Length: 429
Ligand code: S3P
Image (cartoon, rainbow, N blue to C red):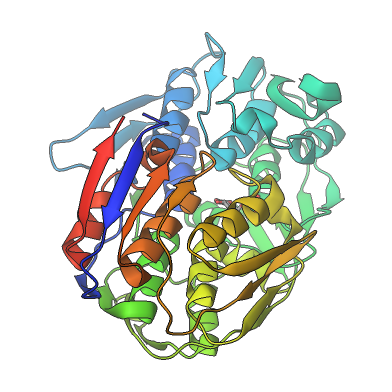
């Protein structure tokens, strides 16, 4: 499926409607992992049905964790890692999965081998391997310790104080999870604050976690079971928010709008979009307005790290240039997102240039985008950003190859695209 091609022809009447996005992917991974580690039975409602969390569940099943799907969509989890994994652990395309699970494996006294698909096997794993080794885990990996498969001999960890070199919630979360079974506290210091799901959910599970500015400390301990309710994924909502900002009006109910996840709304506001937020319900309404280019710098990046491809589409439909710097981390995402975003925009007739740590996008203002053939580079967010550009600003037919990657995070995306835009779509394998 990962090489399927979506063609999209938009009726040029803009976008309108309400979109209930899937459960948050980051929180889904964590709900599965914390339920698996808990002493007792947890429930998860609103879990993302993407392939990425499904892989995390599959890995935990190999440790003997039991998951039961209820008829109403709730998943019941009987916690407890019961035995050493019986086979190689396949994390699919999921960077969050492999990095968080490597922390779990490091804490478990046994041997684990973690791997993933061709894209995941090209992404850097030394960022978790090195600090896990400092904690006392045996960690080896391909390419001199840099790339998956990762081989982890876990157990007997000691808490450390560690300065994380590049802002990464995945690295922080990996080490927090490993710290749960270490001797003594583990303190992590971030260069810039990142999303706090792991801290928030560990606290809710009764763990001692202290946050002090950019430092977080976890104390070892057992987790209580919980009733997890996964809110809507703001990173998926960002696609519709940009479509609305460029070409209509969309309501997005029930989103997670907590720390480090809703910053894309501020960027859209800075661009001139009409964004209204109802904090109490997590509802967001975005209405089109003339957009202008903005500057995005390194301090902004951790808060919008997954939204940059679609914010780049907003920038392409703005008046003036948008300059993004301090975003070199984009080069090691599901694809090199500096290169793949610029290549995608170029297909739409947008003048965009790569920089080592970001990009410059020369907005087309009101002018329509051209149509053409986009290569998603196997990256779900590039594929979906291209589909948004197609329905918001083109008149012809856009084709997007590598569409199958969208199943990793947003299996119902096409239905939502058709519902808000009236586009004619065709999916060919
Ligand atoms: C995530 C953290 C971010 C983000 C990813 C999800 C998480 O990755 O890009 O999609 O759930 O912790 P980094 O930690 O590499 O920045």
